[in-house]
Length: 304
Image 1 (cartoon, rainbow, N blue to C red):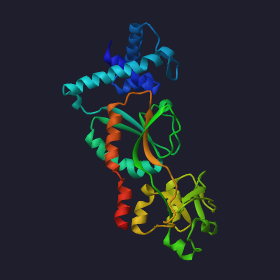
Image 2 (image 1 turned 30 degrees about the horizontal axis):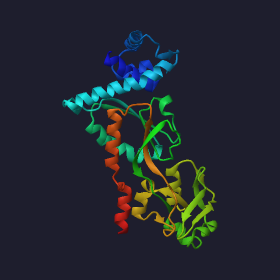
Image 3 (image 1 turned 60 degrees about the vertical axis):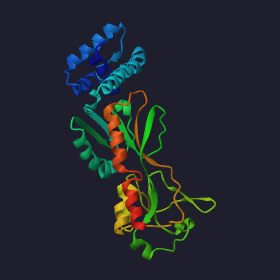
Image 4 (image 1 turned 135 degrees about the vertical axis):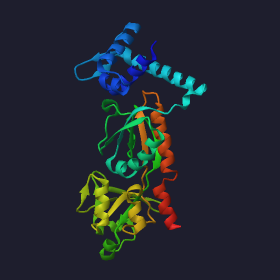
């Protein structure tokens, strides 16, 4: 069985597009289509439903996919066993990531990542909308929300600590703030759909309904409104740590930590073998962010 045909088939299954998969492998659309046809002929089954816009796996194609991935993984393992596994990952790595986190932390890291893996090309989509990895043909997504799709596998890249912040100028003219209940007398800035704030007290949890005159769907906009003295907001430390270090923001209610089970995750479809380029991405950024991540370490160093 032709390994090039298998490799192409696995990419077609990921991208739902023969031309795009062929392009990644340096094949013209006609040659890529011919390779798939030869693979189907050798197996005696139809692996793909073809339409003018995209392709989809047949039932036989779905059954064959995992075996094809296993064969390719075994070949990679065999190469590694004789020293051929030192070849750097290549091809196109398609990544989806949240807009703010992507700009602030992925892009700087990708510069070094691409220097380490010069044979890789990066296709990066920055959006705060949750994208469909399979439908969009993405190899991996970076997310900072809870994983609800059981068809995905999540690997933690970094913790995502969240803190309550305000600008010193706002606090200087605002009402007293000693406990979470006092937030009723303050202008609370909120992210869309996240207006219920939960705090841990000594022996109980406190939940308050945050109320204010500013609501947004963008974390950077929320942080900047807080820096400008508009009110109090919850921010991820990865977003606000530089402002906290400079004193443009200060933590409020530090004795009442927020209850938040969040992290920065790398997710990919469970139906796919972990490709070398995806494994390289996860390994690199786990080390790049650090444990604890460098933004939390910077704040800890300042407070110590």
